[in-house]
Length: 187
Ligand SMILES: C[S@@+](CC[C@H](N)C(=O)[O-])C[C@H]1O[C@@H](n2cnc3c(N)ncnc32)[C@H](O)[C@@H]1O
Image (cartoon, rainbow, N blue to C red; front, side):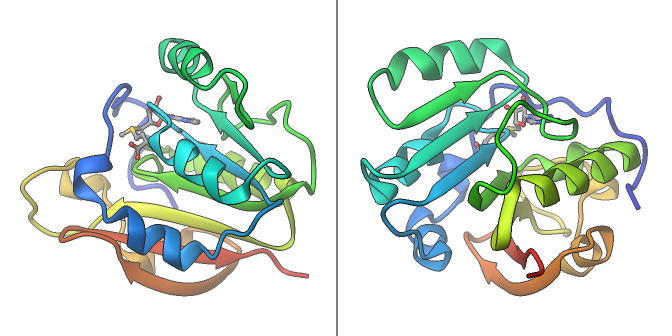
């Protein structure tokens, strides 16, 4: 269940980079050459560029965000790389290929989804992931922190697990105030 129909919580243009331990995240995602990864709600795409290095020339990164300005900038910056940046919304049916993704990564986006958007997201993630593919959701802890959205719209790992029908895997601390919840798509 979404907390509130929070379509009104906007955070376009913000980057989580300073708050997260990228090495912990990348270590836990076990990315290997040749994989196909979706960075959903990529913002400035700093993680897409990290993923790009790890999947190598045989892999591909799709970076999506409804914010046209971010996507245009990322497209220019990553020209000639294995990153395909597209302005689209991950809570709707996107133009991305079905059953093609080893990993969907969603950082600091979920708390802004309404109940309807959560349903759309779940449907789309299930369409995009290969069987046994992973979903990684990074969020800010649900307690007082020096930054972050209002507490009432934050999710604890337990609440995230209840909100989505995918197999929950590990919960990992990825910064002083942030966690990553992993899920897997059923076979
Ligand atoms: C706080 S920023 C986080 C950006 C980046 N993931 C990071 O961790 O730095 C949230 C991003 O989610 C994007 N976003 C919001 N709703 C979205 C949706 N329905 N589908 C995809 N991206 C969305 C926003 O445009 C914004 O760029």
